[in-house]
Image (cartoon, rainbow, N blue to C red; front, side, top):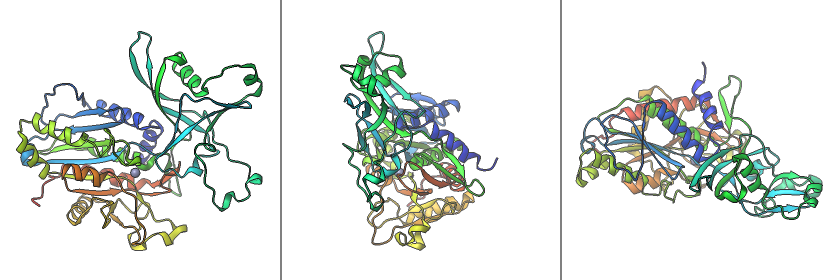
Length: 439
Ligand code: ZN
């Protein structure tokens, strides 16, 4: 079936409206292939070549296979991507009712193209902490998977300059409209938070049992393939669920090897990666240390293992956009379906150095896929990603790469289906190859 992996990506995107759902779906895929879940607070007994995974905080997951030989001699091959994307995060408790309108105040998470969130059916998803029937605290995922709200624009007649550029105020102009019924509101004395009532009803609990929530208003439309030949993918959160899906696919395709294989799915990249579940945390280093110790190594062995390792940081790249050609250095502007892009920046917005670039180019050639290079115009600073942070914390040489993507941080982003298949293929090659080249 043409672009079958891209279609599978769409299913993954549709089932993963938040980082929590992405982690749950990655865990399900790993379990289906026999992976064993480990918990950080428990003692581990690791078998060489077996597949394990660890979840931290519900929104970050690391899957790994200890190598068949000592990590001090063979190192680790790592690949990582991020589970989060820009969204409107709901403020749960605050009622915002006026003249029959029930609205939910929000906070902007990350850097979305805000206009794309307006006048569009939004679903609601995330996790809720509550006191269960037996009195114990529990956390439940919730995914409405249907439209529940909308952020309405003002009529153009009342804002004639809207198309000349408009800055939305997050406090006053981005609350999400959930309902409108003047008669019902007049009949009620105390309404409380409409969102709290909605969540409680969805979960089948009393509103006062809900004690905390991480809930996001997300796109309600499904991911889809389009284009002359169906060669393009359009959907929510392709930055960076496409990276997560490619890393997972590459990891699952690879067999146990002399070296350790580590697939990292990290949260909070969109807000700088600093949290216990982000790239700027102890997570990767903690787990590498435990894998090394579990393999019988003392601390010097762990440091030797780090020095023999190599990482691929997978996050989308800004694709060439023909309507805005002046924003790109034409020579370094990756094309949709032109292959994975290696991301390079002199100011270390990306971790790539010459050796890492050469390594990834070699993997692409060995996997039989084309390869491109992204460098921003010399007068424009690009964004950053997880590679520079995780590389700094572990000392592991890292290449930053990504599928070219249009409309980065829009509620609907576009990538090439062929690029996604190519990325999975080259990552499988990376997981299979010895990470140490004697640098
Ligand atoms: Zn990203």
